[in-house]
Image (cartoon, rainbow, N blue to C red; front, side, top):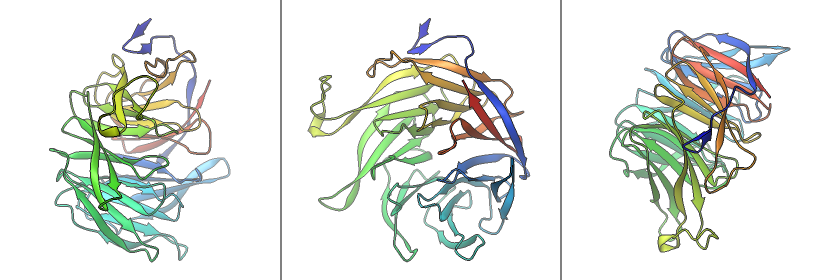
Amino acid sequence: MYWNGVLFSGAMGKLNLVQTLLGHAGRVWDICWHPQGNTLASCGEDKTICIWGREGSKWVSKAVLTDGHQRTIREVAWSPCGNYLASASFDATTAIWDKKSGQFECNATLEGHENEVKSVAWAKSGHLLATCSRDKSVWVWEVADDDEYECAAVLNAHTQDVKKVVWHPHLDILASASYDNTIKLFREDEADNDWTCMATLNSHESTVWSLAFDSTGTRIASCSDDCTVKIWQQYLPGNSEGIVTPDNEPVWKCVCTLSGYHSRTVYDVSWCHNTGLIATACGDDIIRIFKETEDSDPNQPTFVLYHTCHKAHMQDVNSVMWNPSVQGLLASASDDAEVKLWQFTD
């Protein structure tokens, strides 16, 4: 049976707990895999960043970074080269850490936001960094070869708290999600070297908490306080479907709504670039896995609820992220102060 583009089905696949990582005091807000997949960073309300690495068959604490922020650390992000780690904090700053000396050191602190910094993300090129804040703004920073960071743009397109920033997997295109119920896409106008809003995606009925591009960058999954996940499809000028593209600009349309599955706010979504599986983190303590059906129409895609992991955590699941190199390895973080590693199998 189908409902809003999703196929209802019995449980398929299995999410097996690999290990629970204990090290934070208080809620864990975010986790992020190193690009090579061999290291995991986590952060939380205890103002610390934990670095985890594998030793044999176990994951162990490799470092705890404690001197970068004065308040809760909301998000962490590895640079594409893997040499830097950025952390966004409620103290209104973003810290940049490197390990050149063999130990992590904070080599830069980015200031400018008026309120809590909610998210930080690196562009694939490694030359751009984005941050967003409760002050309703999105900042784009240029990263110089000498590790200097300069603000290239302050984008005030949103009307409320901005929850998340994510870069396109291949291009210097930035997506942001906000309390104003919208998603916005930005790019630099080469003619005047100014960043502009190229699209606004409207369909969610409440706060958009997070978003994720698929491996091609032609689709976006977004999740919301309205308890849904939406799939957006890009249509280029001259597309065979006949979708009108005003001003010869790409158009994004909502092509699927995954509803009826989450009983509370969906806080995070991760789209695996290796398998195409979508994982969600929800306030009902559950991790869910969705998969697109083999006969899915790209313009009206259908998804199957592939697995439901009840009581994945004892409290809200705040973050999920697929490992970029180990197929099926998923990390999650929760208000219960735990980080968990899972292995998904068919």
